[in-house]
Image (cartoon, rainbow, N blue to C red):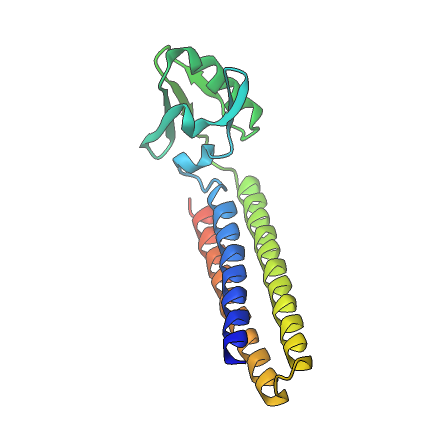
Length: 187
């Protein structure tokens, strides 16, 4: 039976890791005042009739904290890249200089900072929903194992272990959000 419990805990940790990764990826997309190439991760560009991520047609770098430079691998892609950035609705205004697309990242207003913090906290809630779902799946599996002969003490101990894992990942999600909130509110 120990192998079954180990499997339940491994699956739980894997699901929790996915929830944490999702939260980290989503809050990573939130703009925190300084320009980062990950701000453009959601931009899709029309490349000969099919939509592809911007990273597959150009290099994105940050020469300073307020500027993004997008250098396409083919000059013919400049207009498509500009359109893709506009359609992504990121609140950025791309400028094409014939060689590359330059984006000046405007400073965040206090109101926009508060909106971003609220958005980050919303992502935190999505992550915690993922954790609760993982916990429910693990406990359902433990109850099934109990019907198949797992001892009651072993089941209770495993449920307590499940809760410890969930609490640890919940704290990691909270820490991720707290760091992002601090980053967003720092001027």
